[in-house]
Each structure stands twice: as structure tokens, then as C-alpha cells.
Amino acid sequence: MNPQVLKDTLKRIKVENGGITAFGLRFYERLFEKYPQVKPLFTTPPEDQHKKLVSSVAAIVALVQSPDKLMPFLHAMGIRHKAYKTLNSHYPAVGENLLAVMNEHLSKEGQWTDEMQENWSEAMKTVSSVMIEAADNPDKFKDEMAAAGFEPDGFRKDTKKPWELEAISIAYLK
Ligand code: HEM
Image (cartoon, rainbow, N blue to C red):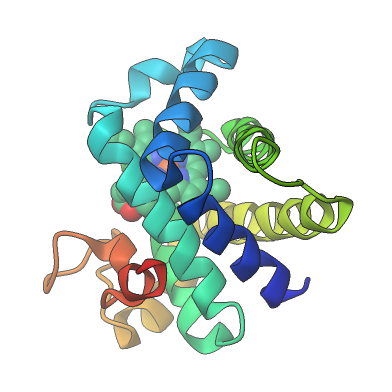
């Protein structure tokens, strides 16, 4: 995985074809069209939901080179998804949708390259398996998560937005 390719993709998503808002809204539109079975799980309107998704993806990219910070972040996120009734079998659908919408978004004004496809595919497989492992074995990661400020249920006492991780992702997207 080449972190620079992941970073460059996000930078382009931000400036091309209507930017992050258009990207995020299209993500949920396509997800619900193609995988209607997951629609009932989402209660937050897509206008608000997409900011969470994009900032978490940006946080992951920003942290690829700091596994000590990234791992508890992903473990906690995987455990929080149990509260949203996410099944392990849903992950490939969300990964497929993310890559398809990135391709669509970046092909309007530029090019979605094979290199981007390969790097994002690898990144989504890795992120999904780390989140799923924690969702399946929450006790195994309790101490690691506590040291990073996460409760055993994956939430935090100091913020209502645990996916922003000290605003790293927000700063990164600016
Ligand atoms: C690849 C990995 C994924 C990432 C990075 C991701 C990211 C996020 C983030 C950042 C949130 C905001 C809440 C929080 O962080 O606790 C969230 C909520 C949620 N995610 Fe995911 N997610 C992923 C996979 C999935 C999958 C596979 C599903 C299954 C359909 C799913 C369904 C949901 C639902 C239902 C919510 C709550 C929605 C609401 O508030 O209405 N996510 N996700």
C-alpha cells in the first residue's frame, strides 16, 4: 500500500466534480440503490452521515504511517459498528461501493488509475478485516483501546465524534 496514492486520491476528491459533499451524497445514493438491504440500518440523514464517513476515511489515510494510533481507532470503530447492527458480510458491499464511487467521481475531470484501484482495494480489505476482528473479539482489545481513550464499547467520554480522532482528519481535509 502506498500512502501517497491514498492521500492524492482524497485531495482530488475534495476539489473535483463537486467535492466531498457530492462524493458523500453519491456514496449513500449508490449504496442504497445497489444494496437496499443495508438502508434500514442508517438513521442519520446522508447530508450528515457522509461527513462521518469521509472524515473517518481521511483519518485512516492520515494514520496509515502511525499504526500505534491507527489500530485502536479501527478496533474501536469496528466495535461501535456492532451498535449499528452491521454484519461482517456487509463489509465487501461498502468497500465495493466506495471504490466504485471514487472511480465515478474522479473519472469526470481526470482519471481513476489502476494504481488507485489496487491501493484502495488493499486499504479497504485491511481496514475491514481489522474492524471485523475487533467486533468479533472485543475483549481482546479492551486494554489497547483504554490506553488510547476508548471505552470498551468503542465510544469515548471526551467527544461525541470519535471518528474525527482529535480532528486529525478534518485538518487533513482542509
Ligand atoms: C470499511 C469500513 C467502514 C468505515 C470506515 C465506516 C465508517 C463509519 C463512521 C465513521 C460512522 C460514524 C459513527 C462512528 O464512527 O461510530 C459510521 C456509522 C455507521 N456505519 Fe459505517 N463504516 C464502515 C463500514 C460499515 C459497514 C460495512 C456497514 C454496514 C452496512 C456500516 C454501517 C454503518 C451504520 C448503520 C452507521 C450508523 C449510521 C447512523 O448514524 O445512522 N458501516 N460508519
